[in-house]
Length: 280
Image 1 (spheres, rainbow, N blue to C red):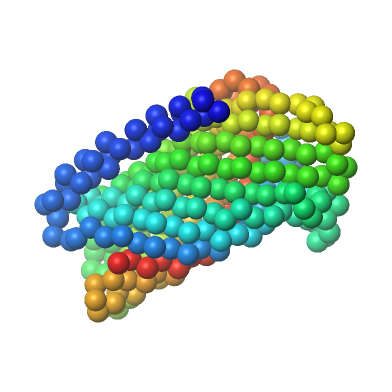
Image 2 (cartoon, one colour):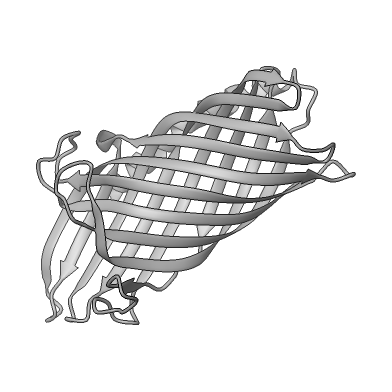
């Protein structure tokens, strides 16, 4: 636990200088910094691994759930760049499984949960603007914490917990539909470096005894595609309705590595985010 907290706070300190520099730049900007609140419905699906090589192939059974996520964001408008810092909290949700035919032959209906929390930083510069169309490019970085507890029909249990740091490029496209309406599309490519990621896996057999435990370091690749429509209000606020397609694939071993040596844990996840965001 101490090592996990150490990694978490080191990565927090990594993000603080970025936010501080953003605040310095924003003093030259004609736009005011603002807060945003979001309400999100999340559909989570974690697929079985069909291939030990990378990239892996998704198969059944799939572990799934739906949950609500609350988000808080702070937006900083600089003279040359735009910065967004976001914090998301998901509600703990129960899990079930699907064998491909809509039936659950894997998990019990109780004593299972999935929880996630994320801290995200986006930095964007304007790439070009032409009439009503504009494109920004930049980077994203942040932290993702996940906790999952499984209770199998056999009586055995599995618990995984990890905190992961990611970094990657980002693009955003905007089209002015009307004076008050904006259509937005975005793409993020996130790389999770195993040397700064940490997780634990505990397996308990049907007799309640600890049968396997291990630390792991994950190497994951994540893509996010989003589409949203925004409306500006007369008081300067705005409302945005959007959807995000979120895919994560990768493996984790006892030792941090970019090559598949052993697979202690893996992520082969597909998530859909439907959100409503209000910017103050």
